[in-house]
Image 1 (cartoon, rainbow, N blue to C red):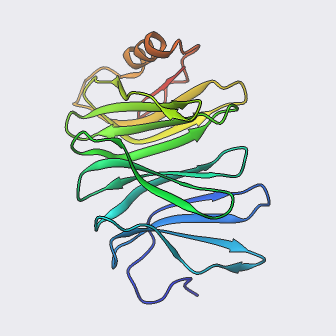
Image 2 (image 1 turned 135 degrees about the vertical axis):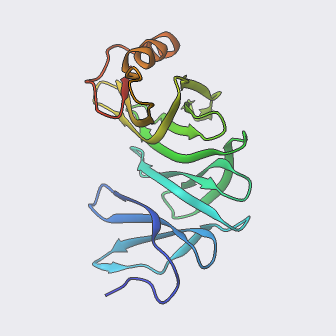
Length: 212
C-alpha cells in the first residue's frame, strides 16, 4: 500500500542507500509545496519530515548522495526563486537546508550530485536560461564557483554525475539537437579537460557525455 496518505506526493524522487542498506528517500510534496524526506529503519518507514518548505514550491528535481561519514547531501530546485539549493542531513538526523548554490535565474531544473573519496561534492546541473550544462564542487567543505562546462546548444538535460574509485568524474546528459547537428561529445570533453584537467573522454553516448 502507499507510504503516505491522500496528499499529492512522490514527485522528483531520489533514493539512496546508507551503509546499513537502509533506503532514504527525498521527494517533492506537491500538496504542501516542500522538499520531504522519509527513510526505512528496522523494517518500518519513518514519518515524513519536511526538509525545506520555505518558500512554497521548493524541492523539485532532487538528487542525493551519502558521504563516507554518513551525512546525506541533497541538491534540489526552488521553483519560486528559480535557483539551485542544497541541504545536508547530519549523522544525528538534523537537517540544514536552503543554501543557494547558484542564484542565476532558472538554474537547477535538472541536477545530479556525487561524492568523491575525499568527501568533496560534485554537482552537474542545467542552466535553463542559457541552455547550458553547469558544474560546481566543494573543496575542503567550501563551495567553489559555478562554471559552464558545455555551451554547445540546448544541453544539460537530465545530467548524471558519477565519480569512480580513482576519483575520475563523468557527466552524462541529454542534448536537444537540430537535425544534422554535430554530436557534442568532442567539444564538451575538450572543455572539461581544459577546466579541470579531466583525464579521459567517456564513451560516446547517444545523448552526449563528457568525462574528466
